[in-house]
Length: 336
Image (cartoon, rainbow, N blue to C red):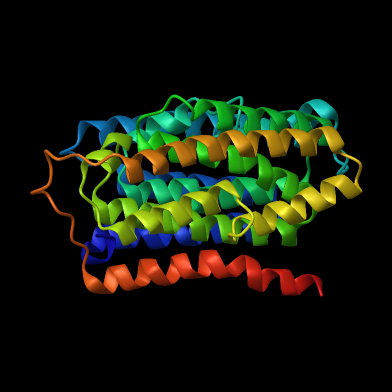
């Protein structure tokens, strides 16, 4: 774990502060420096000389982020050369937006994202799916081409939903879920930054529970959910958190999606709202398919193999699952 390794802890804190440098900078060049520090602090965290997949993932991550950084720097220089005033033309705007989309693994630059997550531990995957999205998202919110971003949102939700249908790896499944949620986050940031922060916090809360649970159970593939003789309460926790992540109404994951849909309908974006709803159904379909199989399959071969979770971990997981269940009921009071 990170806190037992002083080197990892050092890079972890640099990763944390580099995000703050980027989002508090008052120049584009300052934002770029923050992004570079962030990249150089994340690579030592994910690289592992004993694991070939992790080494490959760190190299792939470096290459994609370096290309995005070069693109971003080139755009900043073009902006400085071409125009002194703050108004940007569409080409520069789309270039800048594209470099940010590539940084956070959004479509159409998403191909590196599931491949890299496949080589990471659950904790590193969690950082990549949550913390590493903050800086590009905030920089994207400073200036964006609305039509371009709407097209990207549509691609994100479609590819995030359909890409996860044929996956057997839980990490890749979470990666495609993250791509889908990126579409929701981008529509939230177009509406207001406060709504984005709210959506991001709830999404991070839900994905943290999932990664924490899979890390404790040492699960990386869907068939492990069927084979392992899990405690019934663990299965219930998985069910609650998967459905919450999919955005099913009684759970807390539905609440931010409900607000975004409300705003989209008020702004007369009916087609986008319909697409969001349809793709959420596909997401729920493959979440329910996993959970249904985990509940229904009962392997006699593995009866001797019993998973035990430390009591304090189990209490934490139960508590978070309880929040996921009751959160929606509590959240409805916001509208009174």
